Length: 395
Figure 1 (tube, helix red, strand yellow):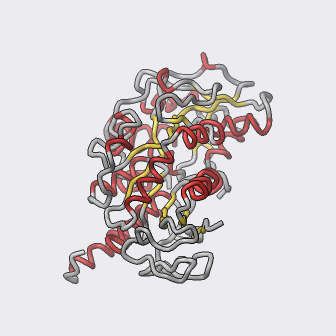
Figure 2 (cartoon, helix red, strand yellow; figure 1 turned 30 degrees about the horizontal axis):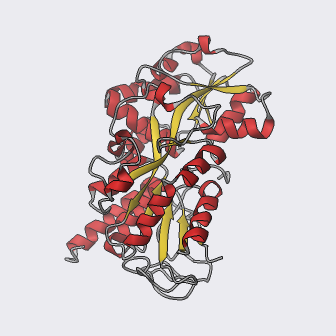
Figure 3 (tube, helix red, strand yellow; figure 1 turned 45 degrees about the horizontal axis):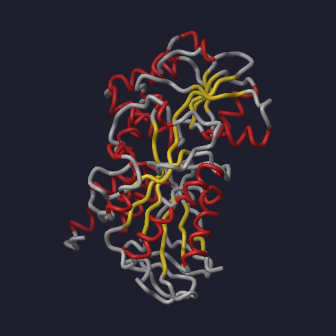
């Protein structure tokens, strides 16, 4: 098999990397160049500096060395380039965890004959890396955990417009209005609750109500988690900066228990360490599959367009500088095929976004979740959210 994985990013915090990337871009202009747990996503620290090592020991610093020893500098791979199958090659920067998406990417490589390399890391860090690399990025495709990162690259015009037959496969709310990225799977924000301590009738109607003093000592959250930060970005967008700040102050006043990630929150809820936790929906179903119906946590879906009912997407964009456009679009078409969409439904318990593919029967249908109406691409101000979380002492 030709499937090759680039070494995971590790080291620097997200905000530092983003600032480094923006600084690097500024220096280029001044110079006149013109140009954790293995099942968690969006939580690892990382660094784009230095060379990234491929399986063959090559370096991605400046020009990406492929397993064959060639350079992917400039476009990441050559359209129609020589691979073992003679079908071209593709470099994917993936903010989605290898354990979740590695199998479906392998399946694409096997079925297409396209030689695929994947660089796994944190979504925000990989977006910052692409910003820093600019037109010299070896990436052909960006596979983001959330739409905000795709929106940031789209705003910089680093993503190319996608074919209408690709965009037309998903609802308007799950793709870029300008056609530069498309969602491939959906996840809903929920409140996980301990079934021994609470029932749904005990839970408030809005995420904003968890600032009530009655919830003191009963809440679990993970402020360093990427999906939590995307939620805070949505809260800022929907309710305004002042409301977001007041909510963070109120939750902090309730002495929440801080966890590393969503799985840890969910386990804390089930064990009774806390009674509620703010997570994505699909973690529960993995635990139920592992531990059975006796697992003492369940999901609570907020309604009425509440910010706590945000539905975000994992999505794909094609880098504008790629020389592998045909291969990249073939990958997007595959990820929106019935085969791949069924994989997300069955294996990761996410929502498939293509009509006709049914989600896991245990999930609340997307049509029944009253999520807030926002342009997901507008969730691109991660830096503003990080600044707010630091200002509040949350990070």
